[in-house]
Length: 156
Image (cartoon, rainbow, N blue to C red; front, side, top):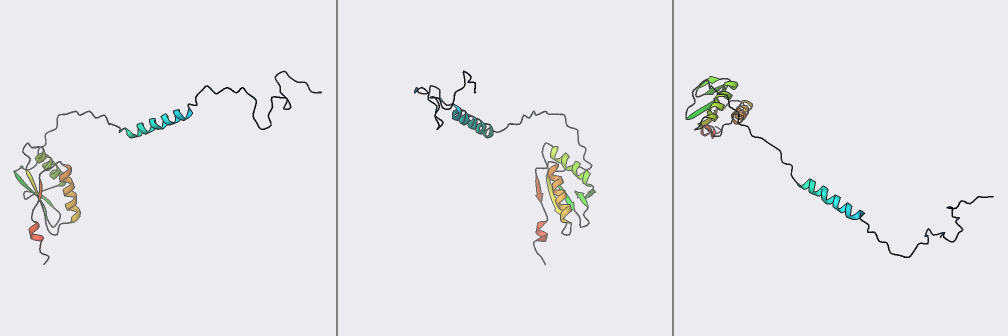
């Protein structure tokens, strides 16, 4: 003997439809389905976030620079030479890589920047020449020229 509760409907009652349709009133649904609308808005928001470039916040602060005392005099035109033994020289005076960096930085910091002329020997190593060019560029030299190339145009 089964006891029926007041809220329990038997599947054999008049309200049950075996195809899954329950009998409801025939009124139209009054709510709009906003899920697709929200999905489209979220996609547009993500696209907007990805499209806007990120601006880095940079604060320029001019700090007092330290004075650079070059080991040699800076002329209007200066020659940086590399010998066949890979030794550096500034206007004919030998110097080290650190001294050359200080010398080029002092030349680049002057108001009327002098011309730096680069003259490697024919048998100077490519590695030393490339490192010297990088050192000159990193020191901030803007006026730069290669000289002595005319001596190497003939391969005889």
